Image 1 (cartoon, rainbow, N blue to C red):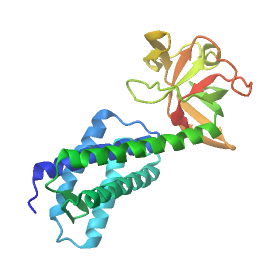
Image 2: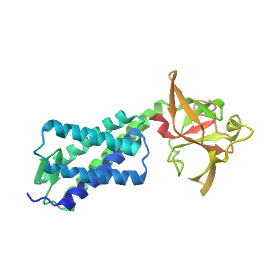
Image 3: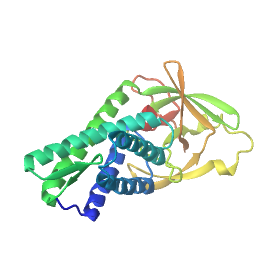
Image 4: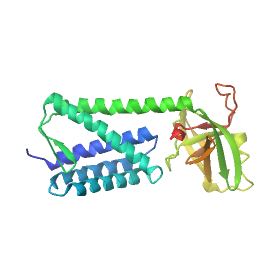
Length: 273
C-alpha cells in the first residue's frame, strides 16, 4: 500500500480536533480554538510514528501515554487532568470502533502500525458520512448524560470571595447560560446586584472589572458588567470544590426556583463538572 504523507497528516489532524471537541463536551470543559487547532496539528504530526514499527511494543505504549498526557495538559491544563485523559481514551476507542465498522461495511483497505491506522484508496463519500454519524452520535450522548446530571443537581451552595470579603450565596444551574468571559474563556455566573454589594469594599481594583458580551431573547446584543473574583467554591454533600468563573452583574432579581426557593446566582452548566 502506498501511503501519502499529506493525507496521513490531514486525516489524523482532523480526527484529533474532533476528539478534543468530544473530550471537552463530555467533561464540560471549554477549549480555546487556537489550542484545539494546535492540538489537532500535533495529532497529525504524531501519526508519522506509523513508520516506526520497528520499535518495541513497550516503547510505543509509553509514547502514546506521554503524548496523550501532554496533549490534554496543553489543551485544558492540570485541573482534572487524569479525568480528561480517561475521557480522551474513551472517545478515541468509540471513534476507533466506528472506523473499524466503516472498513468492514465498505471493504476498504487499511494499514495499522505504530499505534495508528491509515486508510488508503478511499473517497470522501465513503468516510465522511460514517465519521459524521459517529461524531454527532457521541456529541448527543454526552449532552444526554450532562442533562441527566443537571436534572439531579440544580440548586447549590456557593461561596464567593473578593478582596477578603466572603459571601455564602444560593445558586441555580441554568442550562441556557452559555456566557463566557471573552478574554479568559471562563464561564460566567450571573449574580444579583444586591448580592454582589456584599462583596465589594470601598475601593475595588479596576482590573477586576470586565465587559461580557451577551445575546438574549427580546434583545439582540449588549454588554454585561463583570467582576473577576479571588475565589469561588461550591459545596456538594458537605464537600468544598473550587471552580473557575467570572461574575456577571444582573441588575434585577431572579424569579423563585421550581421548588419556590430563592437564589442569588445563575450558574453556568460547566459547574457540574
